Length: 176
Image 1 (tube, rainbow, N blue to C red):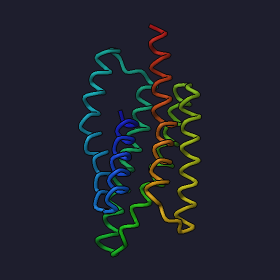
Image 2: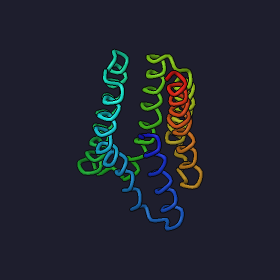
Image 3: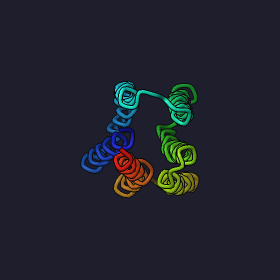
Image 4: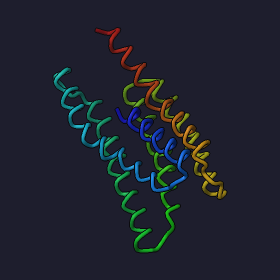
């Protein structure tokens, strides 16, 4: 769900920025936590009803993602704090790209190690490469163009979340 949600919002932002050039559409990024945290409890409840139990690895994976979620909220608060109290420019939000492509891939790799799923490890590693590239672009002062960076961001999330998710679902169906 998070992968598809992130890709859908990224595509929406990309289209709106590319067609209008108006940076106000960056506010659409807030749809990810807004929609995600509404849907997450519904999906977790449905998953527990299907399986009936929550294993040790389920709890570990849940804790990893809880840390990522809390960290993302803290990162957003820091960005707001820098804008309102330190009068930083709106470019501070670029740090959220680094966050999304360092923390999320790290969590994907950790998740893959816990559940012994290579696709999560490989997908997370590919996402991490994009995150390191992003960090270097920001440090070098390279402008993020919506028409080149947002497609790269989408590809990273496809590698990290969508492809491994489909592989895991396919394996789960074969085991039934």
